[in-house]
Length: 276
Image (cartoon, rainbow, N blue to C red; front, side, top):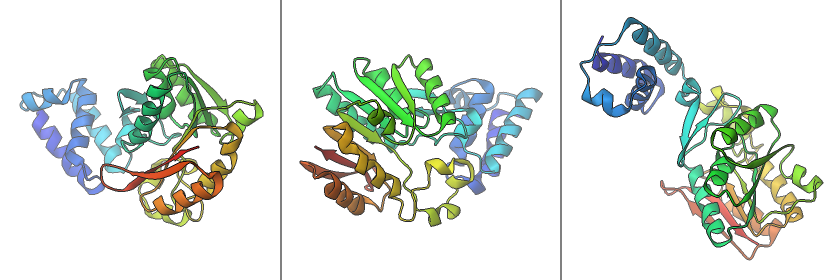
C-alpha cells in the first residue's frame, strides 16, 4: 500500500468521529514513518512496509474509536513546545495559549514576577511560561498526583524550573504563606449535566472537566481564596457562554481595579482578566 492509499483509507475510517480526519490521518502516519507532513505530500507513491502498514492500521483503529490523537501519540503541541500528555490530564488546547500570552505580557513589564498555575494538569501553562521566562518564580498546583507526575516530566524535558505542589487550588501556597504576582488557571468549567453529551468526556478526566451545576463552582472557590496570595493579576479560562457570569463573580469577590473578558480568535468569551 502506498502513502496516498494509506492516508485515504485512514481518513475514511476516522471521518465519522473527527472534523479533521485528513489532518488526523497525516499526523498518525507521520508518527509511524517518523517523517514531517511535507514528506507525505512529496512522496505519495512511496510504499509502506508490512510493519508500517500494521502500525498505521492499529493507530487508525484507536482514532476511529474516538480516542484523541494526543493520547494516541502521547504528546501535544502547545505554544512553542511539544508536551507529554496522557489520559490522566486534560489535552492542552490552542485557546489556552491566549491565557499564556496575557501572562507573558505582564511578565515583560515585571520580569521578577512570581506566578502560580492553579490546576496545572500537564503543566502546559506553568512549564511553557517557566521555559520562556527562566527568571520568573513559577509555582504549579494540582489535586491529582497523576497529573503532577506528567507535569514534572514535562518540566524536566523542557528544562523548566517549576515548583510543584499537590493540593486543592491555592491551598498549598496559603499553607506556606507564599504570595504571587499572577494567578493563572484553566480550571474545570463544563456544567455537570452537559458532560455526558460531549465527546471530550469519553476520554479526558472528569476531574479536569466537571465545573459543577453551572460550570463555575471551582472558579468560585478559587476566587474566594485569591486574596490570601495577594496577586496583581488574575487570568481565568472560561467557557464560551460564561463571560458575563464569570466577570460578575470576579467583580463581586475581588473588587478589582479593572476586569475584562477577552475573546478568542473565534470571537468567543475565553479569558477573564482581573487587575487588582
